[in-house]
Image (cartoon, rainbow, N blue to C red; front, side):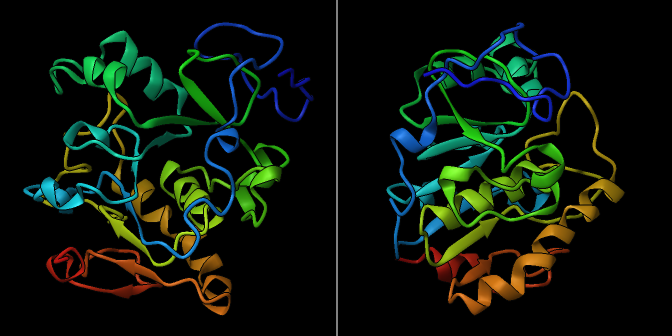
Length: 245
């Protein structure tokens, strides 16, 4: 599969190595739009509210783990829009915080999916997801057609949310989508090599708030499982109740 790069997609040099074309398979080839139609799905972010969470409750469920949340469980999809994160995983940068993370990534049966906002070639076992038109357009917009790509809001959690909607999941449960820090912590898993300040975390709520009315109009139920989350545009439910069966 050859995808010719366009100037709008080439925003920076590829992180892993330079490549004039993307040779990776697209996620849509193995997980088409509507694959989860009318089925519940759980999006797992990195918010500190998940500290102490019983990860066994996610077994057997359709799940998308954002960035390194997969360290705690075996998801259906590992998803990120940050190729630095991929480098940190396979290069061992995370190992001092998450011993065995690289081995877990190598052995996982989950789909490994990365949103590319510029042209690059990643490891051959990584599937790519197209950005909606280009980085700037995808930053502002939400996609309703997976073939055209997805929006991202400059946040892997929002991009994963757009992916779950296009897979047809309903309802969609949000875990660890806190959009704030707690007790001085930015993530339940200890954070990333590049620290995230709380103002940045708070800003991630805006794209969700923008699309929430249209999501509701289309009959897609979104349930935030952290009642203390800074993301206030969806209904809330206690995680024990939501994961009881």
